[in-house]
Amino acid sequence: MDFFHALADPDNTFLKLALAVGLLSSIAFGIIGTYVVTRRISYLAGAVSHCVLGGIGGALWLKAIFNLEWLDPVYGALLAALVAAFIVGRFGHNPGQREETMIGATWAIGMALGIIFIDLTPGYFDITSYLFGDILLVSSQDLKLIIALDLIIILFVTSCYHQLLAVCFDEEFARLRGLNVELFYQLLLALTAVTVVLLIRVVGIVMVVAMLTLPAAAASLYANRLSGMMLLAIFLSAISIVSGLGLSYNANLSSGPVIILFAGALYFLMAGWKKLYK
Image (cartoon, rainbow, N blue to C red):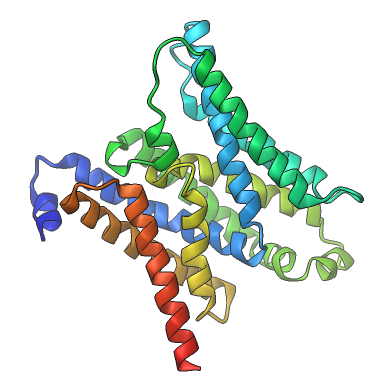
């Protein structure tokens, strides 16, 4: 109740902004998470999210060394995520190339480069908010970026729904029907990369994959259609974010981990209920 009383206070604009960002993030988490779960690329999303640290570290180093005031770490994170998605998507399927090896190498190299760049950067930088997220620190600019991301995702999914459905569930059939599977797969990876970058402020690099998988995985237990799975995943993401934000505010805890705990608890409760019902 303290959380809702604080929301009603007109002076707590930061809390209203955090709640708006959280609810809008649920759209991206639910839709992209559905594709991540059905296509079984959660480890790939993890590699992309951890490579983001390399881009953040590189942007901080360039900004400090060359005095580039305009260079926001988000630009470096976005570039690193897109490069990682392209490398894994393009070279992971090559004959003789094990995809899990490519994912592991990309994951490790991205993290290592990020730490090295931060060590080389003059001064001290606290990257805790990037690693574990802090939804209470989001700005109106973050809100605009997430709104733009949601619109792009919705437009892309509605225009390519059947193609993405085929790529996720029956890649061989889609290829036989003449669909450019590689192109749609790369577009899906690129959109996943952009989603990861823009949502790390909510739950952080370390835990963004959990929000892409847990609500969608829970939704997959009860939904019979991909569209229904998306809607249920969005709803579960919203519940996790609002509940986690409220509890973390009242208990003075980090918001990112609490949100993940709620998402995990929902998943296990729904999985247990499903098993019990059967």
